[in-house]
Image (cartoon, rainbow, N blue to C red; front, side, top):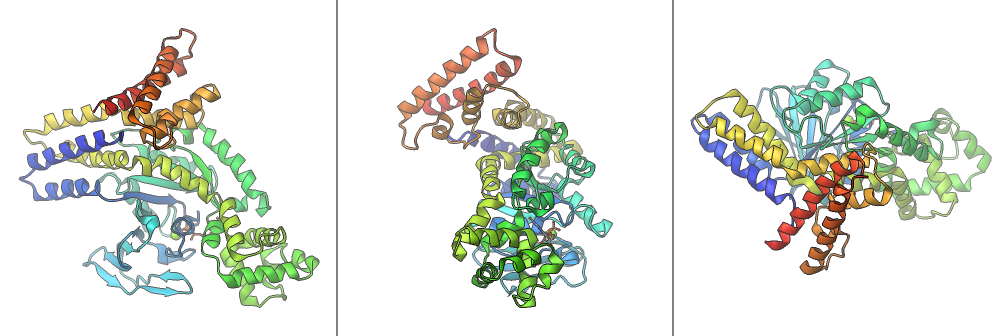
Length: 485
Ligand SMILES: Nc1nc2c(ncn2[C@@H]2O[C@H](COP(=O)(O)OP(=O)(O)O)[C@@H](O)[C@H]2O)c(=O)[nH]1
Ligand SMILES: [Mg+2]
């Protein structure tokens, strides 16, 4: 059973009803149709956070190609969409002129987008990539950008008061737990439907390699800090979880060139004391004379000083080929953990998150213009939202993941699994192999159901456990109903 078919179907139906009810207004029909169509497209995930948080670098790491300009100042002033397509194409949407195409210009592996001087609303990059197939990634210029206008555009895009968010989910990058971060997240959540639930935001503690002055164990410190952030009351209420990632290491690992590996090999073969002295600071390394100056500059740009240190150490430890070194850098970057969280938190629930976006759009229409059917549509939306067990599952899952609901470890693990935290398919929820028969699944679901009913009815159960039990029981009942169909 796919637990999200239900909500997707009912939201599509209510959207179609609304399109009929508002047929006298072509603009409203187009608006609703656009949001209905979105439900058949990949999930839209925006990458947000302050300027230089490492957003574009992380986008490249996720795609495994240098398609987003990094560190590019004004070049990155527009919101840029990256979506899977048959052929590469770049389309610029100026604020006050029709869209125009730009040549696809790739130099030294990196994609160039020259925007010129016109004011740009958005850029859409069509890019054939399997990594964009389940998610369209949206790079935002950043909050507190150099100019107030750019920052305002990012805020508009993510949480404008006029329109519901264009993105279905957000990866929010932050380098420090800073009051601005929390204010931003709060403004993002101040919405009518599913208010203040961390259903669609994952926070990333970015540039994790820089923590603790770029020591080799920086990523371990980053994990500790991320756990502490994850326990912060405000953040916990705003995002599913906090994952530490070094986007730079991940990007460099996923796009590593043979020449870069050759340079590391030279560093390993050179006199160790010279290399260690050079690696004390970026300035010193830029002046290191065992390599060509532009090679040093390139390594610093692509790996950062701590990345160069780490790579040299790893080559010494036996990661003695470009693929081995690249693999280890990616492994240490935290990218795989982030992908895991994105899959469980976003992709597996794409239908639910898209349904939520559509309801937000419908909510705007219903609250602005009244037609004879408006009241009954409002009631229908309320029914869907209140009755959406999927929303309750998400809320409980995030509370469990973040430790705000305390349960014994084995009970917690079972609850997460049954709620779909590891994947929403019934075999995954039940902890069975993919080939389990319906009868086996039914038995496992009945077992789970009676276990959780006992927990609900046990007078010694904590309040947290009985509340959680109610939601888990509904998940079990949902699966059983699915088998009956
Ligand atoms: N050390 C380190 N530097 C990073 C990391 N991610 C980005 N940077 C650097 O930070 C600067 C800004 O990165 P960019 O991705 O353009 O940030 P954006 O403004 O948020 O898009 C660039 O010089 C990047 O090389 C990281 O994980 N570690
Ligand atoms: Mg950027």
